[in-house]
Length: 301
Image 1 (tube, rainbow, N blue to C red):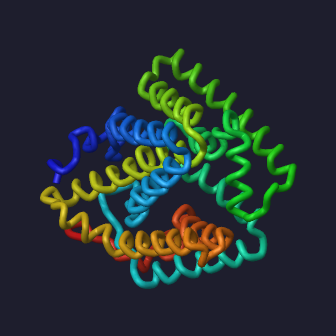
Image 2 (spheres, rainbow, N blue to C red):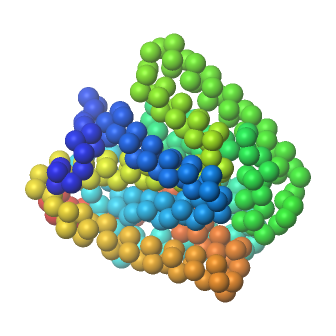
């Protein structure tokens, strides 16, 4: 299985947690960024659609859980899936009652979730969510308004987003200075790249770069590396069996919703609510509520 992925995706740190190499993210991040930069120069609308494709490619990373303290992977049971759906229904109900409030909660959870996957750069999560507002304030607020179908959005929302973007930008810059002085060059390189891409690209393509190249591929490679420690002869078909049961329905559902929304059969407000209600349970520790009912295996998917 290690022949399927570059060697840089199979590095274990001294703490025992298998992680990607310090610079393993660089090539996919550069490739994704270049595609979106060129597309944005030709047609911003095309860049947004290509960004959506990258978002879809990043979805599979959440199809499998992994334990943090030992090399196991976790196949959700029927009970776990049912609980996930119940959480989703509750979130969607919240969305129908208050799209604005639910969207704010979603962005806050997203910032926290991304930060959790950046053990040395916790502030990156907040930067990914709000950083675009520094250079693209109109576009960022416009996306917010589009998602909740409220144009213009309440003035206090735009004001709050600007203040948070400035505060987050200053905090990220301070972290950059401190890490540069400490000689922590891998973190500095990652910070510079992420700061730069959010200054160059509009909000949707910029977040797509992070979600796919940094978050999605990073989590995927960590999980595969963790499984590989338990099963040294892991094959591509095993990975497909591991990720397929949750990935295929999610991808089909996402493409269906996108298609129906594009054709005007589903309002953007409802489509956004469905997406949010699918994502939020992933970011919450749902598995902790049903830990005893999970099927955990060490040998085969």
